[in-house]
Amino acid sequence: MKNFNRIHIGVIGALVLLASCNKYLDKEPDNRTEINTVQKVAQLVGTAYPSADYLSFAESASDNAVDKGPGVGNSVDTRDRPYAWEDIIGAGTNTSSNYWNGCYEAISAANQALESIETYKLGAAANPYKGEALVARAYAHHMLAIFFAKNYEIGGANDSPGIPYVTKPGEKVLQQYERGTVKSTYENIVKDLEEGLPLLSSTAYKVPKYHFTAEAAHAFASRLYLFLGEWQKAVDHATLASGGDFLTKLRPINTTMQNQESAVFREGFTKSDVKSTLLLANCYSTWTYNESPRYGYGPALTAMFNTPNVTGGTLANKVLSYSTANYTTYKWLYYFFYTGPGIGFPYIMQPLLTLDETILNRAEAYAELGNYQASLDDLNTFYSTKIRNYVPSTHQVTLPKIMAFFSEADPKKGLIQTVLTAKKAEFLQEGLRWIDIARRNLTVVHNVIDAKGIETSIELKPGDPRRIFQLPEEVKLAGVELNPR
Image (cartoon, rainbow, N blue to C red; front, side, top):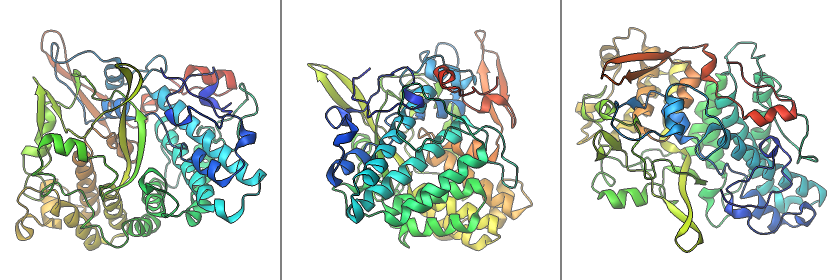
């Protein structure tokens, strides 16, 4: 575990003075009275992003993981337990508790930046960083709500416990916090997003994709408004995120990336110059690093790529195996932060928001609005960059194709199923499948192979309390109730 300087955190994630993994804060400011210039606020708000990732527990709990059987791969607790929808004890690397802490550390940085802007009356010059802090705070709270609270029910009361919405830097290590409700949590998320978005700038940063620019914020909004069932807002924000052009900015899976050698592909997938990527975060993670897990991307999931989908064609995504029954998308390249000769900590650059997700958000929203042709247009734009040897006249997605492929008579349901299926494959090993599982209340089925090789299955159905990840045990010290089990 790395050392870091806490920014007067005093929030949920620091209840027991937890160490963290944010190398950006290894130097001042650590006394908030010194954050008194626009430059210092800009430095601080650049850390208002989770320094931990959700990949291991989110992917393992989803249907983008399979049991490969005894003797295949290694036992990795951060994968094994989420696969069985069991709580992980502790807050080690790759755990849900570590992600909880990472989100609240990010929120603390955002809150300190906002307070400094107000206290020192930094004026209009600080507006881009005020906007960034507000949207980053909204994003982190939304991710917490996805994993640690019940799903927002469109048209429902949403009066179940939400997550603590923290808007002030903590004055004490052991403060008391309330979870509020799912309804109040989402109201606060929307308020921060809508206040912050108009203040954002794409010219305030040396590397804009490490920050919430307007484009990234619009992509986040397109995701958020799907949760809220505000379909037209989801469409509008997705359109703004793309700048009116999705086609030339999507991941070129079936052209440029298909022809790259695996090493080049791996190096380039998470670079800041990838057009599709709108927001990148530097996360301390051992996800897929020297791992051959029993539960994960196995042979059964390769069917998404080597059998025809709704287009009639096959996806051009890489299907690579690094040992028996262990497959990889080869998306992740690790960087080391060295703390001494030959020792250090692995990091990944994680795409948090992409245009590939955003266009599918818009396709789903169009379907919900009854604009089926617009939904089909987005799906065809998306697949034109993904299908091997794509030929428009052969691979065009149509309603008859959808209804036949999914055995679905309702065109709206068919379109939505097409969108969700496209996301499932495109974002394999990126953790996004769980977001759709939570949002759409999808049942998850996992296979289980016992020591004798007998295969059975287990299910995680809507309403099961295990769909909500457990809060860190330490939050009880702040009066925060744990999720029921």
